[in-house]
Amino acid sequence: MARSSMAPWRWTLDSMPRRREMAETVIGPRTKVQGALEGADRLVVRGLVKGTVSVDGPVLVAPGGTLEAEVAAVEVAIAGAVVGRVTARGRVEILPAARMVGDVRTPRILISDGAVFRGKVDMDFADGEGATHG
Image (tube, rainbow, N blue to C red):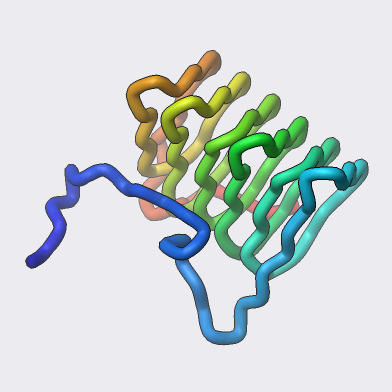
């Protein structure tokens, strides 16, 4: 059965997009990273990241995880907390119980019931045109 384009996304660690050659980088719950974080793999944040994040892949901020950063990625799912600007070429999903404070730039966004969002959304680019890294 084909999924309607209006159907909500439900991201979990297992449902996030994967490429065969893509590894997974996990920032653990007792780990703090400060500075620039760059890569081409799937990033899962369970701890704290402060600075900038530029990933040519999906990013998941897991429950209990915090990003205080400017983020550029293919897709971003937030189940924890984000303070900063998020740019995604594909989509952004703010899951129930997540907290996002900052601006979002993406062609597609879903803010779930129960999520907290304070900021602006810019969807004024097609297929991620204008979303840059670095």
